Amino acid sequence: MAEIRFQSFSSGSCGNCYFLGIREGDEMKGGILIDAGVSMRRVKRCLQSEGLGFDDFQAILITHDHLDHIRSLGSYAKHLPRPIWASETLHKALSHHFITAEYVPACRRILLKDEWNEVLPGLVSVRYFVVPHDATETVGFAIRLPGHNYVHITDCGRMTDEALDFCSKADTVVLESNYDPAMLACGPYPPDLQRRIRSGSGHMSNDECAEAILKIAHKGLRNLFLCHLSENNNTPELAYESARAALKQCEYKPVRLEALPRQTPSQLITL
Image (cartoon, rainbow, N blue to C red):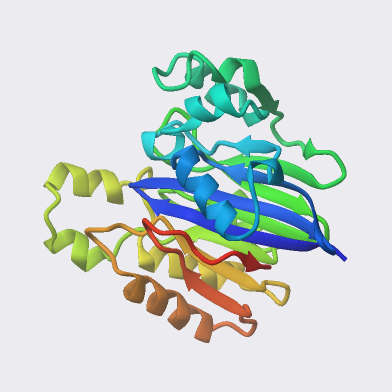
């Protein structure tokens, strides 16, 4: 039976990059990266520390075109030309972006809307859904892997019905819990930036994440990872406790709840 391995290399405004790998016995059968906001050197070092390497992923998915998600995408396309999967709207933006315009178009793969796309045939299929965020277009991913349904939502101003529906069918959910409202209000950010974050097309607060958890918790939910925590307006403890309090109200609780670290890699986790 296949095992799904998950690792976050970084999760926050400093950079975002995640690994999903499929292992059968002693052999890695395939894998993907989600976003490329972390350098190739750092990702290589993290993978090698777990006995893995660049050969263990064969495709890259991109959620949106903000710098902390694509900072190293041009380098990946130049030096490690894997298929780069994104929506048509996002690929058009990447083809003109100063970081990605030169090399990414040669690796371009279009995710079709409202369809399951075979990113790694027989191993990984992906369906994207648009979420509110102030980029060219921002998407979440529902990902089917052998025996697992995974959903990834980062940089999301508010949950949509479609996002909630995908989460309510997944065994693993990565969900943004960006800021604590009190810390944001009393923190160093100017009023305009605070309004942008709270606008519904910025980021989700711990409270909004907790509200989403109440709606998506179900018997099959096994893993819940909190991502993209703010360095200035949140702490891992606040995000975790807010999610844990929501889960206490739910009939069904996941086996694992974790706040992903901002600037350091998580453990390589078997889902």
